[in-house]
Length: 330
Ligand SMILES: [Zn+2]
Image (cartoon, rainbow, N blue to C red; front, side, top):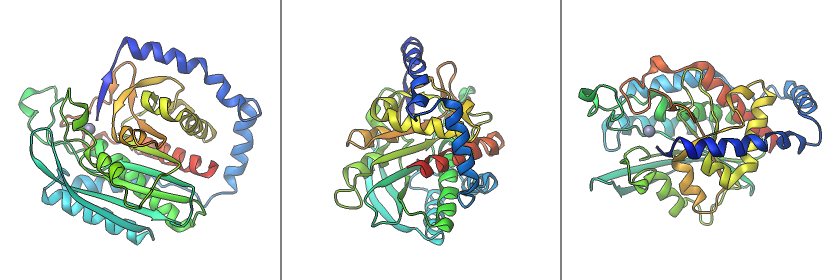
């Protein structure tokens, strides 16, 4: 993924979101303190909805062990095979999409999206997604001699996928009544700066060719780069434009479980990412992504430092628990 703008536009937008921050909590019909207390007491009775950060971390480390997940490579195939079989093992109905997409450099990328459902008969559906492919080049590396090397993608690709796999495991055990889908999406990170359409090819394919006729989830949440040290997740511009209510509800869920500081009510930036492809098709979608108005993405973004060493279990846990807390509230 890539950011569209930084600096002055974001600073202006940050004021906007901060300005409406107070009303988000009053909309729950009580002041913020009451809301937090009442939901915390509910939380204790719902122990089955847990999230194991160590398990999510192992999911990340497993992906890194496969090697860079560049479309068309043996490492990519082995990872996809493993992801698909894990989802099945957790009791999900898995459908794969196989196709070919054309990259910005003219290369034909084999595409493999992994789509999984629980309670497929439910009409109100929530789609959780993350990309599992990794960038072939560390083109943001501070050392120019390393910029042609592939990245490990522990955070960029590995973290979102690792968190979703743990959510899949938990939901598989707890048998929720709602309709939940998981999309592990391919070919996100093969793009080039300056060409917005060169990113998120797998999500674009999914949106244009839904695996089920007429598939249109009520909401979608994208996790991308959710494992950085002390990671924080300010609001993303397109998410706010398309789905401010969902974004608010996620931030409120984070507050209820004591992770509000990681989900501040300020803008980070506008990020071209998988969620934009869904939004273009009328699906309200939110991108949970580490991007700060000052500093941008995590410093390891598209560098050879995007390694397991730089993954923070606590960040994975905070995001996973927040998403599950949000799912409870639907
Ligand atoms: Zn990336």
